[in-house]
Image (cartoon, rainbow, N blue to C red; front, side, top):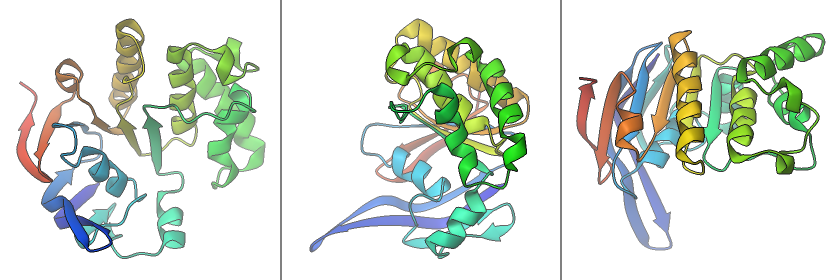
Length: 225
C-alpha cells in the first residue's frame, strides 16, 4: 500500500533549517497494524502528517497504492486521499456547534459517497462505535471517551483503506483508552490498514509491527514478539 524511499522533511524558519525526517525508507502492506514510537520531537507526528498527505516531503518518494504522490499539488493530493485515508487525533477535533451525527457527516460532505447513502453510512458508524443513542448530542455533552468514539466514527464513515491515529488515547483515562484501543484493533482485524503514533509501550505492543524513530531516522523496525 505504502512505500517511502529516501524520504526527508526539512523545516525552515528564516535562516534556520531543521531535519524532521531523515532519509526514511519504509514499506507498509495493506492490512498491517503499525505503531510509530519514539521520544518527543523525533518526527513521529511529522511522519504521520506526510503519510496522510497533510504535509509534503522535502525530498524522496512516497508511493501510495502504486502512485508516487510526492510533489503533487494540494488539489491533487486532496483527490488522492479523499475517501481513502481517515484521521483520528488526540484532541478529537470535533465542532461543538454540530451534534454527533452532523460531525460524522462532515467526512462525507466533500467525498464521493452519494448524498442518498449518507444516512445509512452514518447509522452504520454510530452503531459500530456504540454511540447511536448520542447522535443528537453536542460534543460538550459527551465524555472524553465518547468524543473519541465520535472522532473514530467520523474517520471511518467513508470506509477508508488507511486509518492514521495520532496519540488516540492521549486525552483519555486508562479505561477509556483501553476501549479505544479495542475498537482500533477490531477495525484492523476487519481489514483497515492502521498506522498509530503512540507514547505508550503497552499500546504499541498491540500492533503487529513497531517502528521506533530517533532524530528523524528509523532506529528499529520490528514485528511484534
